[in-house]
Length: 387
Ligand code: LLP
Image 1: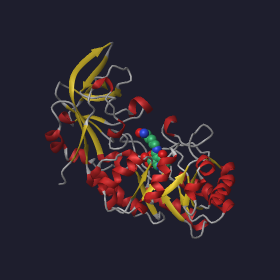
Image 2 (image 1 turned 30 degrees about the vertical axis):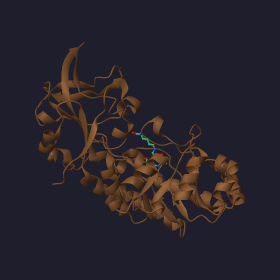
Image 3 (image 1 turned 120 degrees about the vertical axis):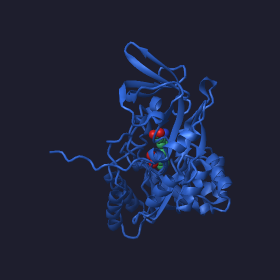
Image 4 (image 1 turned 45 degrees about the horizontal axis):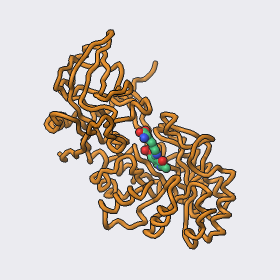
């Protein structure tokens, strides 16, 4: 007999339903963030016993209030562009550069120069910078990103390792990279790998730790292993939940095997996905060839994840929460593309023009990936007042 999964607590957006209905815009759409949820996730990550430093992959959500909340938990920032570094500096002017980890990919020389001048940690993602710009790295400590050849994640587009990936240094080139670093007068203080996004098996980070540990033994002197991000969140009420304490236990195994090494992690989605919802209004409904379409006031211009990755987001009619389903429906936006489908075949109640539709787990890679396609303004962003 299969034991039924323990009941999960009601999501914050159910508890705060009336507040959300009050702030839902009458036209267009709005991302709403609950910073209490960000704080809870950030504190949980900051509390991991075997993680010596955590860095928020701010590409997931660079909203200023999110950055302030994450920082208050003692987490630093992983930035991939000087635009992200500038956002952190504007938002948190007193933050020391040592709380920023710059991890660019195929960036121009000028960005490495600027980051080193400011004094961030720096991850190098290939041989080119070391071979062509050795003058930049004299007397500096650097981290090398390797390609662990373990592609992982919820969709092909988010797997960042393996033979087809543009990221990292293949393990067989790592010795050469270390020689180039030495010749430049740089010290390799750390190794890094990030294999992909949306991973729910805790053992993944132990495997990455083991691969990095072996690579570190080959070059010597490495003090830090950054095992990356990719911590997944459930995309439906019965999807698997990543157990953070299990991740910690697995990392404990890595630490015991590698005496004295520091472990770093850089989660993005885990800290913010569940803290954000997208609110929109029903514009029109239609039944066509037996399919019920519920049209809403924004689409792939605000949330591109379903179109780009086939990602699943929970969708509810917030105005009629708890009403009995009236059958299946497809929830679509107003964009002139067939991929503008936010959710297919969802059980939805009888739904009317003007109802508020809520799309959940939209706090990561939502607003930041939006566009003005069709010249429709994407959803704005607001933060829910604390209770
Ligand atoms: N570290 C590095 C080097 C990364 O490239 C990324 C994400 C992260 C950490 C954080 O990954 P996370 O913990 O958020 O999974 N737009 C896609 C995800 C792309 C992730 C890109 N890199 C999505 O919406 O699923």
